[in-house]
Image (tube, rainbow, N blue to C red; front, side, top):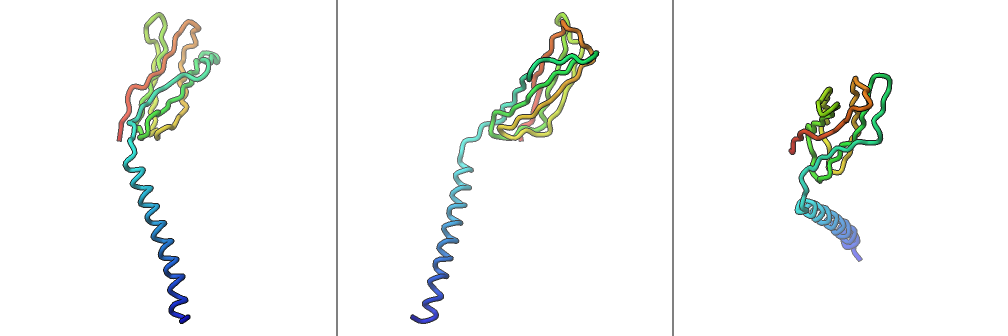
Length: 128
């Protein structure tokens, strides 16, 4: 065997492996690109009980994006109502929430009235 023949075999093997890797990478990109994507689906739920500490009421919630795409500028509103009247409200913004991601938030209200009702809701979000 000539030295040229010996050198060509490793070069061919290396070239073949490189081509296989590039084809696999291109195939993976195409596969991910054609997959159906669900738009953002942002929800909020209270976690645990409302804590009363001194004259303050702590309301903990979990914001979740159930979709595949990212939600930006998520606005969550917390309200404290007594006898159907909103006596305190607050809002929090989450810059972005990736698909399937969760974020914990806490609202603190000045009133600790035991008869007060609390609620959390997602007011808006931006879909990029």
